[in-house]
Length: 90
Length: 523
Image (cartoon, rainbow over all chains, first blue to last red; front, side, top):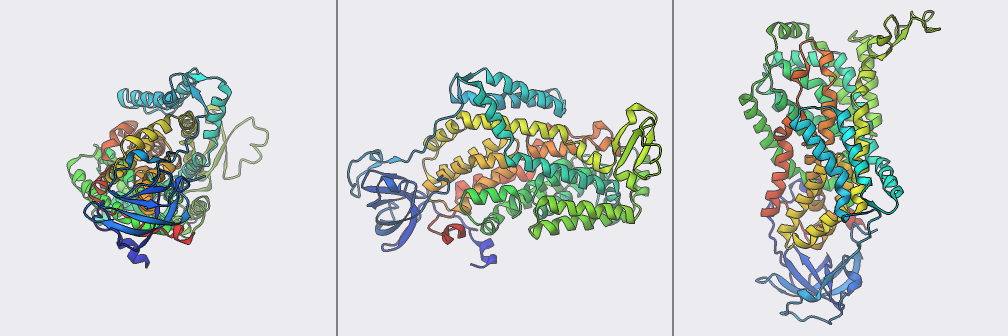
């Protein structure tokens, strides 16, 4: 991205419920886990992430989207790997 | 953690999910709960409001007594060993951010005084007169120049000091409203503090949110410029609606006649400071270059003598004073009251001695609030109860960052303290690092220059105290009481408003899935 583009990015009203195509891989933070699957919020969109256990809470993980319903802004995905830490982690 | 097994789509598993918890117990415990650790700061704020707003006493020494009394009373509420409380005050006072602010004030104070004594104010008045800039436009133009200067040097505190010393008297003489003028200077400082790549708050906002500084600056431009355009228009409108002070026509004429264009030569040291800062030099080095060039110009162009820059006033009975009296920096004085060191360098720093102590004590009290847990109680409560969806989460980020910055005098310290919480709330909704850094720094820059106890206001007010001694026509009654400027810091209020609107509408919102910050991408 050029420097000029960086200044022009974000001059728009972004939805609170972004959509994701099935098959896309996204790197997102897991908010909560019930032990075997996790839940992530991207804005008000919810993704249930299978295989994201308690150890992934507040970690950034790669998720492959497997189902997505635009009308409810919710879907499911598979945990691929942990890719990053929170910026406030010690 | 609960272990209820996998959840199938369609179920509502909210109750089964619990979030992470990295709560650490408070280190200083208080009778009355963790909230009591906010007592010293709360006591100080009430004291500051009563003293400066209700009774109109803008005395920094009085504020020092206020925070000291707050810290002493607070100690009696400590459960267990009081030594921890005392050590926490030290821990806060020795933070680099507090010292950085003091260094910026002192260096900028010397620099501004050299320019002032070298006739820069006269040069500005001459230029404004020649260009036909009247009282109406002067605050708006001051806002733009302060914004450019701060964006160049990165320290809003330093700019507040320099511009109060230089543009404030010029504007007041030309008939601009003093309160509006002070507001315009603070607004310019906010603009630069927020946007400058070398500003410490910009750096802290980027680092705490794992974002690169270049990307943070580029992405925040949209918020800053929207606020600034409205603020600029606001200063023009208010400039035409608000009257200036009555300066006697004679004093004005005398000053105008003595105003010479040569003082404008000091634009060069100002540009040198900006240039050095932009080239990545440390702010101490950058302003030191400005000081050296300003001294050289004062001497070369005969704008000030060596004795005007620094003068030792020795008593007549000093053993070595007589033989060395021919030195241009030494004068023998008869009166004991006149003994001392004077000159631009001295008067430049003298306004900041009390202020420095005050700021260290406030930062100490702020550390008590952080270590005592009041800070955490507030933030955890807001995280659990307010951040229920992405819009509310962003509004919560704006509100908590604004609140903490309104309370803690040095905005960089407030930003360091609240950075992790902004990151925690934002990451929960996968807001990207740029958006989080921008929300954080918008409130940090704005709230650091609005209230009477804000570092930027204190710095500007400190610099203002020197002015009545500098100009015959300027007396104490023409100075601005800090509480009066609060509504006129347009850039600050507008910046907060822009972020509230941005949270409500999604303007500028970016998710981690839209664009990763370069810092994260590199990892």
